[in-house]
Length: 299
Image (cartoon, rainbow, N blue to C red; front, side, top):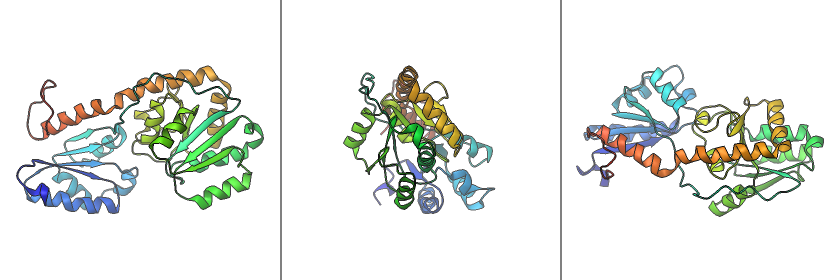
């Protein structure tokens, strides 16, 4: 009710896909009736699957908006190609940023890998566990993988038990900010070979800690990771490629440090002041204001 007043010119509505989109669409309709400018920002990692060959209601809702935002270039292009709205822009997610010099993790006999996020098929973590299990003899004594997050723990535990990975894989549960900081500060390589991803915020957070990334080129991930520059790109579900990438970074410390240093450089483009400046420009364009970077931020 607070936002129904004439004080507010723009309704910026965040949405994912599937049922969340239909819930969010009610707010689009409401604010449109009230004469507000509408921005719809999509975060769903499976929006292309959700939209499919075209849903009339989804297209109708999108065309009510004055601007549609995507968190990655991949989905922005998808929306443009499907003519969902004439004004589609990409606004990346952002991070606070550590603003600290890169300090490589303390040297150890083990190369420390980490992952945090949903523990499910979509994120590719089971592919990593299967890869380690199938190559246990080659990797035992060389790596340690620490995993944080929640999800399908029955499958997780089944794989760990099947391959006897307790001495290689450590599960840390859900990570708060301090636990995440501690994990990333002691990690050598971040691994996240996702099958679908709208953006990849955990990848970006790992980049900011100076980590090389093993990942895929799905969805918004190419906005973050470039093969051979700050990480190694593999095909989703390809365990041979995952193993090859792991072995490459296990055996080459100089490469790990080089890719990690490049990750920090790439991460700075996503610091919140940069994203805020872009968002400010988008808001002002929606209300018909000629944006000037010297102007004060719009409230």
